[in-house]
Image (cartoon, rainbow, N blue to C red):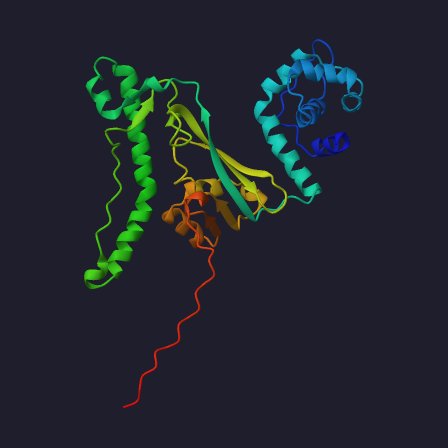
Length: 316
């Protein structure tokens, strides 16, 4: 593993990494070595700066990687802090190289699911849109910003739905006579009165894991996993929606294009949404979504009855 990390890091460009150009103090460690040190230690479950420093003394692979030098925990922490974005991008590049080396870099069918993660905010800090209007003079600053956020989200949602609305109107106009059906309702760019926004953490929302759980201020964390043998997490995102019903298309879109094209998607009954399935199928994806919980279905395992003989009509 240490040899692979060293070879992979050699292919990472170093122009984004911050180095000391003043030339004062002790000789600095090369950013390529520091990057390899972080990646190797993270891959082996060693995350703390002090633990990484200790590994440079007692772990033979880390000693080899560092050429028997010993960056202290302050140096490791500073490198990580000053090069956070560059290190994150390098992790993705090294992962891609590792996946290619192990012949795992292929994206065909994916499986998606979500889980609720608690936010660092109180659920009692939510405010309704209509109640915010009543209290706007009392808490003008905070509540005005909350209403502005809700209105912005509602307008963005309406813009996303506009194309689908126009498509439905055009399809209805092409139909003849009474078969046209009910006229589609245009998207509304104003938030409903009961729409809420948390004043501490507006990116979170009130949601619960299931019908038997309490409501908590949370995020809905979504993940997409390759099902073609590698089991790699190829996409991830955070949603404000308590339900998974409208997350299927966004989860497929979260898979980076450089990994390849998604050919199919598997999901549980929480993602059952005809409009989302239709959209993915129009993009030539095979979509397999459960339509209900297994324990709620009734199956009849009795052998089928033999067909009855056709009736015999007497001749006159």
